[in-house]
Length: 168
Image 1: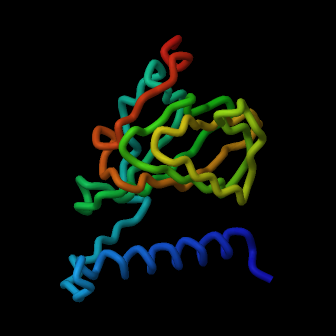
Image 2: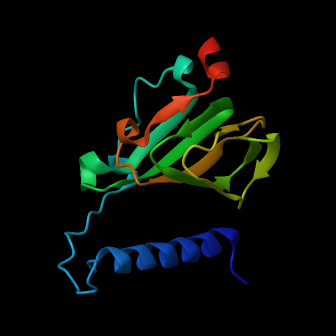
């Protein structure tokens, strides 16, 4: 029996393979030359600095593992650790879809219906324009892997924090 992490990894590998296949053919269905592969290691990626509470980033440790700047990608893959009490306030992206997978821990997600419990193994998809966020209400770290589909940077994502995130 596969662990949750193994099942998530297999699903991500399948999605990446399908996306790569789609990206290597043009509109006429002819194969085109793929670009150079990008590889890094989480240990080599610095944590993002300057994330402001007033912009909805409350005590989060964020890494942009793959993005426009590092890999020339029109997508972002990120890693976030939320210490107890940390949260990403209710926010949305006007120009991209977002997913995240809870690899470790539990807390509460912000949805258009209010807050709901979320924990290890949850896979959450928020289409562009959909309000979402995560609050670590537990006494342990929460680890998320996440991605933006359709934007290679925060500027390109059309990021907007909800009015309640401006309170500081």
